[in-house]
Each structure stands twice: as structure tokens, then as C-alpha cells.
Image (cartoon, rainbow, N blue to C red):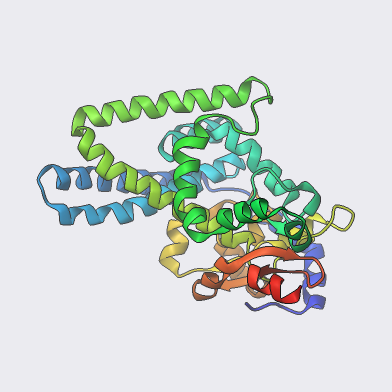
Length: 340
């Protein structure tokens, strides 16, 4: 993980909000094209996969893999809509986001509210709880009962985090406005209308291809895309040199720049993930459309050295589980035990 010097980071940080304001304006023709080149291939791959199943060509189900990649990209467009950065038109962004939420099994208005909380408090130790992966400090973990420690260790286990977790989140938990049940009518309307849209879409697809093809094709796509999405979100904030601070010391720009990673992925993966790996820039200015984030890195290459995590390095992030306040970095359970 490469970092620029603290002095360079401090000097550059003061100007970033002004600099990034130049990149906020989306190109609406580009946005329309991005939507088309994502939805059309996804629908095509889905149809070809179901046809392969129907005609017994099981090898054709390999198309489920790229279809899952396109579903990740659909979610990233929904994500930009949630920030009002895709068309920069609140009405258009919201309704496109709601429609895409049917495909991603994500109630758009609920997700947007939780995600706004995440952006407003990422890296703040006193504001954990909504829109984040649960992260304890070493001291908090040590104060837990053995049952509490076991539950937290299971929660952070890779098979749960990236296997069972996405299944639970996208298929079951998001069917209700969990965490927002007292938040007024909007979360309930968002959840129930999304559920209705999912049910109608599923009924139509089952009518055309049958329940077997629907389950064999669509469930793996959703699970694979969900696992990839959780992995991306994990690496964006759960890397060794991330930043967490108490509320009295927390500062938005510093937390955005140093508490979010630059996940340096191969070009094809950057495309499928909507460049969301350029996460430190995204947290500095969420209004920058995803397709312009690489443009920022091109014009300001010094940002490539802040919080950089390569694909190989990201695999080591899996073991990180606790925030060590004394060493100011994420550590593994083994490292925390050794320090004790």
C-alpha cells in the first residue's frame, strides 16, 4: 500500500473540494449510453443463460459470471443515482434508481438514506451503526463476553461476510426497512413497492422461462453480484492504513481522503465496478459521476498514492477485524491477542 508524504497530503487536501467541483457535472448523453451498455448486455446474457438451461447446454451457464458483473455495474449506476450524480436531475436519478433497485433487490430510498449516513460519518468511531460493516475496537472486543466475541468472530469470518451475508442481506433483510421501521412512511413505501416490483418481474420471467430456469440462472447471478458488492464495500474501508477517530477528532475531508481506499483494479474490473474503487475521491465529492473518477486520477496522479490497495494486497484485508486505537490501524484477531 503506497502513500504520499503527510506534508503533501495535507497541502493537497485543502484544495480538493474546490478542484473536484470541476468534475461534478455529468454528460447526460454519456450517462444514457452507460445505462444502455449495461442493461442491454445484462438482459442478453440472462436470456442466453436461460436458453442454455432450457436446451440442456449446461456449459452455457458460464454466462452467469459476466451477467453477475453487469448486475454489479447496475448497482453502481443505482449508487450514482442515489448521490444525484448520474443525470444531476433529482427526479430522473430517483426514478431510475428505484427501477434499478428492482433488479438489484435493493429498496432505493431506504438504501439512499442509509448510504447518506455512511458518507456523513465514515471513519467516526462515535457514529458507527448504519450503512457500515460492523467494526469494533480492540478494547471493545476485549470487554465482550465469550458469546459476544464468538458472535463477532463469526460475523467477520469470510464465509459469513462474503457468502452467507450477501444472501441474507439482498434476499431477506432488504425486504423490510430494517433499522428504519420508525422512520416514517417513506422506508415502508420504498421496501414494499420494491418487493412488489421484484414479485412482478419474477412472475413475468417465470412465465416465459419456467421456475427451474429462473432459479438456476437468477439466484446465482444475484448471489455472485452480492458477494462482489460486499467485497468491494469491505476493501473500500477495511484496509490496514485506514483512518478512524473519535467524534472530537474526526474531520470530514481527512476521513474521506485517508479512511477510504484507492482500490487499484485492472481496467476491466474498474469498468464493471463503475470505478467505485477510486473511493477516496468518491468520498471527498460524491457528486462526481463514477465515469469521471478515472479522469480525476489522470489529472491529479498524486491521488494514486493515497490509500492505494492492489488486487493482491486486498486479499490480506480479509484477516483485519479490529481497530487498534493505540497503533491507529486495523489489526487481525491474532495481532490483537499478541499485543495483549
